Image: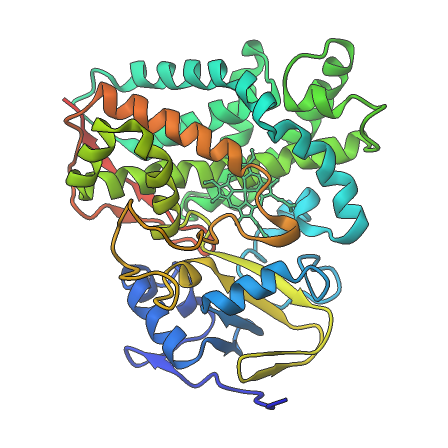
Length: 412
Ligand code: HEM
């Protein structure tokens, strides 16, 4: 085995590529993401980030190998979390995220009941509710001259989708919406006053809210995720597991869906010839959505911890290190994707890593695909002349999530 213990001395634009300089919180990284990631991948595909005490991986083959190796690489961060890794500032308030942060048999026990909701048969039952939610938001923007697609369409839409999945009753929607949006605002921006504290309070509120909903669904089950999870004879999970995973759904599924809608809108409007093709051949929406996910991934980075010493490229890692898998980096690796920075809905190349891989592969992926397909088709059928007001909308300055802070559009 080659032993290489430090390779952390590379710079970009005169600045060391360490800590926040490897995150969208940094303006240089945010504005030049593809270029910085290309440079890192070419120079040090397994880069030591001494500042955040982790290894930054931008190479597709290494990322894919780590994600698939369930035995050696885990998500559970209890014993060995690195200091300063992104998200650690919100971790004390949000804590562990349900199945997200556990591994092994315990993970399987909690994940299996949830995945029963994401089969084609069950998802089909949600389609009328998804369509209804989209129609409601379409009416909300129909007569607007100019509006912010993120705050006025994508954010409320992702909340509505979540409410449909969980089976939130109409009378509880306002309360649910407030909690869900306060909880997730922290992954959109950090400049509002007390945004982290508000998220902490919303998490507590949401937990109490879900405990109430669980009790109601036991009495009166319907076709939704919470009802399905309360079928005790089929699910060896507790009410706390159910509530924790519902909170996780809101965190994991809402911001990513908002970003998928925003990133897709910008990709389509910046490539009108491909949008036209999709509008004329709606069966191309499926391929277009996969390309949006690859080209501009809503989740840009996910962590892993190695349980055993290992060799990644020319780097030897002692046991117990933190790895930051750059999904955005892997998805733009030229070894796998030709002209990776071009948006091309006709690719015939390996799947992107935007939903992760291995044991924690996104459980909501089939739903995200269905929701975004219906939303884009409906939006562009209704507003075929939609245009960006600003050709380069403002990105979010948040690590780990890749999306837009605001996207002003004209539809009429
Ligand atoms: C565009 C949309 C989405 C993207 C890009 C996305 C991305 C991801 C990624 C990358 C992971 C893996 C994390 C890891 O391995 O460390 C993940 C896991 C997860 N996602 Fe998604 N997600 C999306 C939508 C959703 C939706 C709509 C839901 C729920 C309704 C959801 C629920 C989850 C859950 C519960 C996990 C944890 C799975 C586990 O730990 O076993 N996601 N997602």
